Length: 193
Image (cartoon, rainbow, N blue to C red):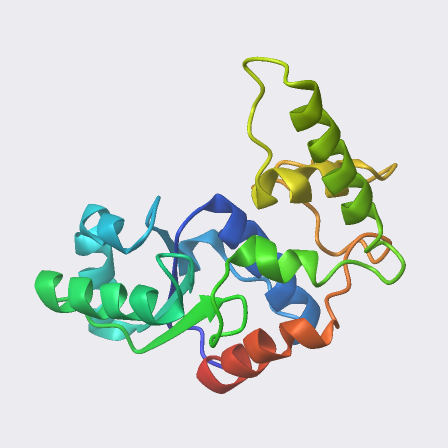
């Protein structure tokens, strides 16, 4: 196993998920120092340019981003273009949900809920439709990130539902052995473990 790596991610939700995912599958407590948080998509890489350049001197730089910047191919192209523009070295790239399709972390999480809990998303979708039908002004938009928040918060003893504080090791809520997570597991196994 390598300990000399940096995971370059978009935000705190990605860090929190990867911490639990790596611990669960590889029995490794990944340290926050292993992460470089960009605070956005590829256009924000300039904000952490110095950190990435320092990391690339003696560490493996692994990008883990969402494939939602106009799709998988566009996201990959944007990351590669930005890395050349900023003279950044990336050793490998994984794009959520499965390193092939369009989507994001929330796309992957929605497919990785504990067995039997999938129907909760039908209820959440019905709630969204009802809210929209009523037409109350000044409502917050409920996107996929918010749906995951509602899903997680639906359980007793689920802990904090906020993405950066969410507990993914709770088997009543999440299935970290979901086949949808296999591409991420295989990627990390190959690159780090």
